[in-house]
Length: 198
View 1 (cartoon, rainbow, N blue to C red):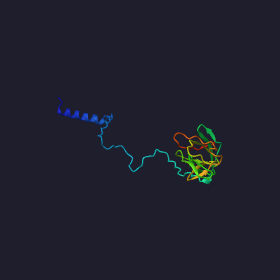
View 2: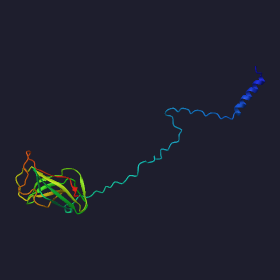
View 3: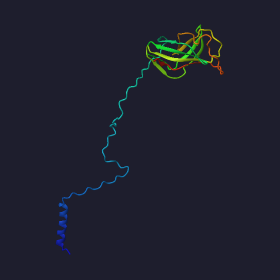
View 4: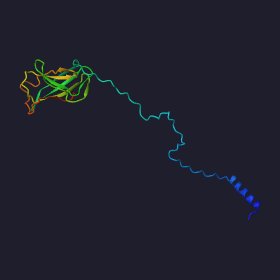
């Protein structure tokens, strides 16, 4: 048994060993954080906007090419071809300045007095910007003529904006070349989309 003096010395030695021990204490493990508790990590203040990762937006050009005026355009057509029960011709369009037209032209036929015989609206949506002095072409087809025979020559016309322009060239179709009437009795006059002449 230790006597009282020995016990005091033993306790003193123990405290001295702890105080003088050069080995650093092991770090204590991190404490678990309860869900919903605020984080101690530094955060970006709410008033500071987040850095943008998007490139600068390019301005959108809202300027549109104005519609063509009747005086801006010249149109002509070539030879009239007979293809089965259809009559075909190619219309060529040239603009004097930058302007736009319907991608699919409206077409019509006029008698020698200028009266409308057949009018057909644009066959599809879209606009086309014309480049000055560049020729554009469209294929025009006439089929199933069921109306009374008109006086010749017939003039092809194009619908531009709110008016019609005359297409120069021979009669379309030529005298005596009207296509036969189809069983449904509806005359067909249509034009393809404008395309630059290669």
